[in-house]
Length: 503
Image (tube, rainbow, N blue to C red):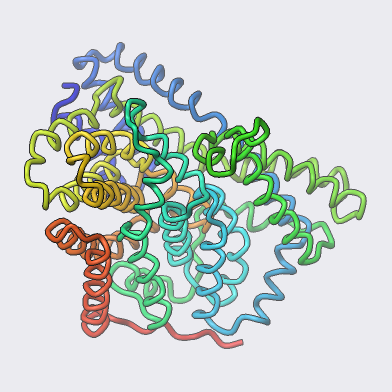
């Protein structure tokens, strides 16, 4: 059943069960077992053994990300216990006037933290939760804003872990400079730009639509926090931290993570900044940066008695506990992705063979690859894996002499991969957006699906025009016009006002 249409069954079962039952752990577990069961020709004992073998490989290969999450959880816990987050929240609640302002600040912060999507999700959530809570912005709405300013921002940021991932997706035999190609795709990554525009329109109109509007009505202004985060929200504040005790550790964390990426890329060995980012190991760089930031936070807090030594030590275990839910879901999601990977069911190989065998009409290549990348990203929950599968295929089917069509088609792959990842319940970024906002994961997924569909449909129009006229700028403009038209039609027919909160 490897490299056939049957490889679609495990992700389809997982996603369907998750949306129907709203039990993400069980859904992922069932999907993983079904995939292993199929791969082992329905031999039960062999399937169980294979399943845990795949899990060991998948989790072991991502150990740097797990360590990064734990270190970040410790820093976040220390900031929360110090009282710095509360001090910031109290100041922001006085300075920010209403829901629109709170949401706008969240978007701006998400744009500023462009270095990595994992870092973005958890940091923006930590900093903005007290502010959005004050104005009774639902955790699902906060999760959408976090998610929409994570991968969509990173994929158009010249300096980010995503730039490195795209650059490394080109085959070793390719003579094309991966980083230069990535820079050329930025203006034509229609999904990323339209997602940002859609958020701005939502905030400007002060309205929500479809599932998100229904969720807002159901909550009746109450904050619905996932059970696994209740203990964190009830944790006692034992320090006397001020706003600087939040801002300075976060600034050091950002700076150290950037340095960590450059370090793993060889900046200390004489490479330039561009080359270092292109060759960096994102996960290892984030671990290095977060560990240095943790040491700084310790040295910044303890001598000033912001936290006692004993209280800081408690943050070590509490920070790990806070991340347990996200880590568990990530481990299951990575395992499912591995089951569908090239060493087992090889879903990507099947999709690649279908695409390469049906990519004869040049002008339809951008929209075709966008649709395939969207579906593959959704089914596997990984943008980076989608890049790795489809970009080599693009290079093989697009005439290398037609440089502009090549750039547009690669941009379509990147856009589709981000769109699929953005809405997939098994995507690590989607999972961490839920963790950052501390909302139920399925609530986050179900409320943002209609928004992603709207933007994706406008992207189809944009890439269709871009392919027909071989003009990426015209395609981007078409996408923008399509989104504006769709938004105002939806706003007139389905829009529901979100009342501003009073001081």
